[in-house]
Amino acid sequence: MFSSVWNFVKRHKRKFIFTGALVGGVYFLGKYAQKKLSDMQEKEASDYISQARRQFHFESNQRTCNMTVLSMLPPLKEAITNQLNSESLTALLKEKPANKLEIWEDLKILSFTRTIVGVYSTCMLVVLLRVQLNIIGGYLYLDNSVGKSSPSPMAPPEVQQQYLSSIHHLLGDGLTELITVVKKAVQNALESVPLKQSLSLMEVEQQLSWIRAEVEAGERNMSWFLLADDQNALADQACGLTENDVVTIRLLNETRDMFDSPDFSTVLNSSFNRGFSRLLDNLAEFFRPPPGDSAPFAAPDSLSAVSLPLAKIIPIINGQINSICSETPSHFVQDLLMNDQVKQFAANVYETFSAPQDLQK
Image 1 (cartoon, rainbow, N blue to C red):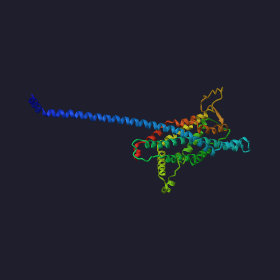
Image 2: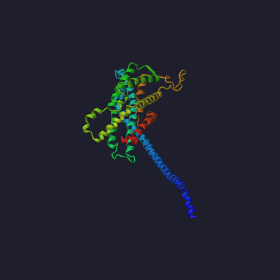
Image 3: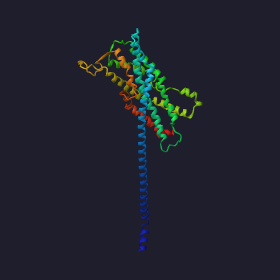
Image 4: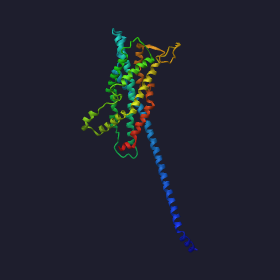
């Protein structure tokens, strides 16, 4: 019996070898596929956890951005009102001086300048902090990532403080230069408009458009007001720079690179448009027809339904700084913080600087 079995095996040896190889191959192939599937599932789970962690960190960073903007508005308001002190002029008017008309003319220019500078600088503050805090946020995410190759942090606390202190340019020299540019444009637009002349909201909007066109077409790019150009001065001090200084300079240069991108210009212009639109919404409250006025030939919400003498518009314009630079979330500030284009740009900045390949570079 055993000899017959053996003879059968010898006759079909090749088939047995082929079948054994096939079964063994299928077995090992199955084990390999199972391991690959397991590895793939583990990688997907790891990627999902990493992405969720990154998303959570990003959202937390945006809340920090919002809180930082609100905390910076009082110093911004103080810086603007210190340089454009309309209160001293209104106090003089109460004393009924002989040069009353001259003071009113000064107040006209100063009030419009103050409010327009307030809109520009608040928009700039929102966008600047979005860029800076998302650059830092991206690096902090990498610093806390598992498997980070370099032991030294990319954004140590001292560097963060040094880097964020650059915002003083916007509250200092940048603001002073912005005031000069805006004041000149306001004078060109309004100097010849008499105080007794009545203006509708549509005509006020037209005046603001003319002023904006002159300011934004000026010699200086609008991003110049955001960040000082210290590259030459820093180059002269290169020998005495610390390691933290070098990292700060790199962050500032990366920020300038962001400012040079077409996307940044689009986002900044979008913020300006949103800011001036909200300003007009605020002014519209004062241009409503009085209760009971039928206004038969104009809809109550029409931009030209009501006109006010410029002398009455000046105090309205002058008081807008309290809404524009409000540390409590006003509609004006909320509109800027919730601007979808700003939020999307912030996400792109964070994505760029939190990507592992940037760490290798």
